[in-house]
Amino acid sequence: MAKDWKDRLGTVYSTNSDFDYEYDDIEEEETLAPKEQKLKVTLDSKKRKGKTVTLVSGFIGTEDDLKDLAKILKTKCGVGGSVKDYEIIIQGKFKDKVIEILKSLDYNVM
Image 1 (cartoon, rainbow, N blue to C red):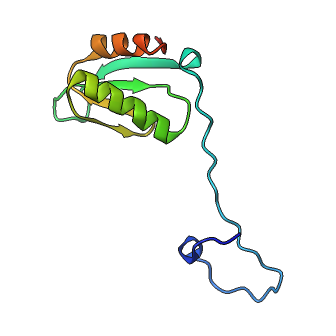
Image 2 (cartoon, rainbow, N blue to C red):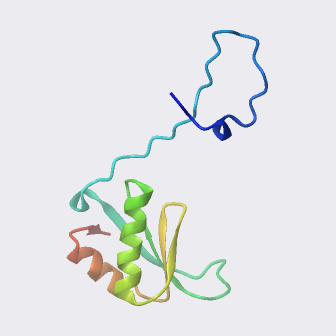
Image 3 (spheres, one colour):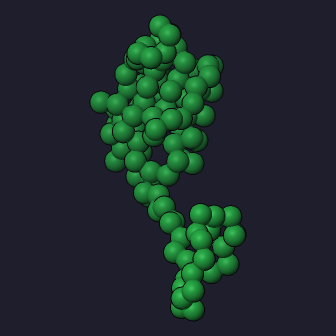
């Protein structure tokens, strides 16, 4: 198990000759198929200086797959956005368009 020494930062010294550092490997949940996803699309303007954004939440899967989906939505809407706290944030009022795009990709939208 050859891990980078930077992963062990914060570990002091152990005199135990049998000591083996335990790595906190966070296992990501496997991405569900689009038909098994239950996504929720909402408009939000709270804590955003009055600007409205479209939020997509409820995605179950890896962060890379979530970012790929966000990229598709941003491209098809022609706007910017981001992924934060397992939510896709699309700049602007695009609720209907996002729902249409997700349904065309076989996602269940609530």
